Every structure is written in C-alpha cells, then in structure tokens.
Amino acid sequence: MKTRMLSLALIAGIVVWATASADPVLTPVSQEAYLKRAAAGADAPFVLDVRSAEEFVTGHVPGAVNIPHDQLAARLAEVPKDKEVLLYCRSGKRAGIAGQVLADNGYQRLQHLEGDMPGWIEKGLPVETPRDAAACVAALSSGGPAQQACVAN
Image (tube, rainbow, N blue to C red; front, side, top):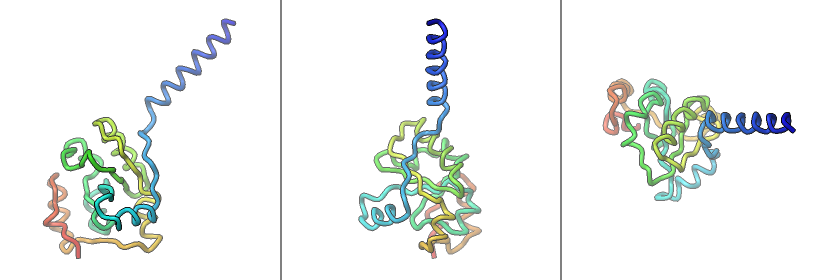
C-alpha cells in the first residue's frame, strides 16, 4: 500500500513538472489553411516572424511582422491580443520560445505555421522581400516597428 501511494505521488509529481516545463501549446496550422484564412481578409491571423532581421529580409511570408524572439518581451504592445497570432521561424524552436513569452503575457490564441519558413519556400508559396534590405535591417535592429523601411517589392 505504501509503495503504491509513493508510486502515485511520484507519477503525479512528474505530470505536474512536465506540464509546468512544457512549451505552450501552439496550434499547428498548415500553409494551405493559413492562405485560405488570409484570403478571407478580416479573419486572418497576425503573422509574426520571430527570426532575426537579417533572416527576415531574405524573404518572409507576405504581410508578416518581424519581431525577433529575443526582443518580443520588450515589444508586446506591437502584437494584438484580440487576434490569433501565427508564429514561425526557421525550425520551430524560436517560435516555441516566442509562444511561451506570449502565453506568459496572457495571449491565448497562438498558432504555429507548419514547416516554418523552409516549408513555405519548399511549397513554392509567395515570399516578400523589402525594397531596401539594408534600411529594413537597420530599422528592425533598432528594436522598433519598421513598416516604412521594410516595404515589400
């Protein structure tokens, strides 16, 4: 009986630990599902590219906003809480980190673009690049919004 109680307590402890240390659940969204919603207009999610500015200027999902994952906590005001937020990076790791930052700050409607940027490119989907990559990187690296400097071609 004592052994069984100890085993149950150990299992419960592991479950609590695993739940507390897990990344927030980012609902996976396929490229096709995102494109369908984006075409609908107002219901489209806020697309957040959490890669570095240098990666962003080489090509990004059309309409995406770049806030590198390591700047996100200081720039939360730029991410709307009233919309779904679709995150992506190169491999999913930084999107997971950024998702945790958002979840810790009350964001609940978090999604992850399946395949991240490599998956997007692999499917031959449209990619935006800024007219002036150097100006865009400088604006993004300053830690603020860069809409004017990062206008797409």
